Length: 81
Image 1 (cartoon, rainbow, N blue to C red):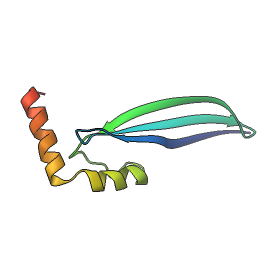
Image 2 (image 1 turned 90 degrees about the horizontal axis):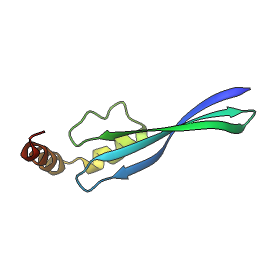
Image 3 (image 1 turned 90 degrees about the vertical axis):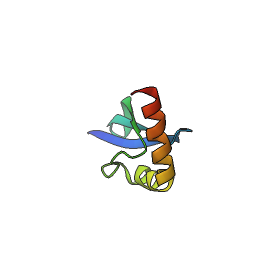
Image 4 (image 1 turned 135 degrees about the vertical axis):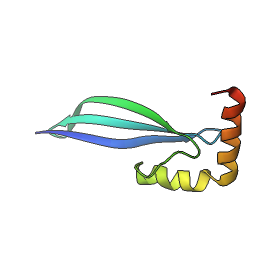
């Protein structure tokens, strides 16, 4: 029997408040992993994180304070991005 399993397996908070999220997708056959791949994305301060994994939501809620969001937006504006 084949099964596909997706799990957030790594969450990192960067100095500027961005949260890097790595998702692992594994294919298992009879309980034995036969293939896997990773996908990464970033949740920036001020971004909508309502569709993220519950652990990512909890971290974002505690890390993305008004001060962190303002500092991040000011840094981005200073870079002209």
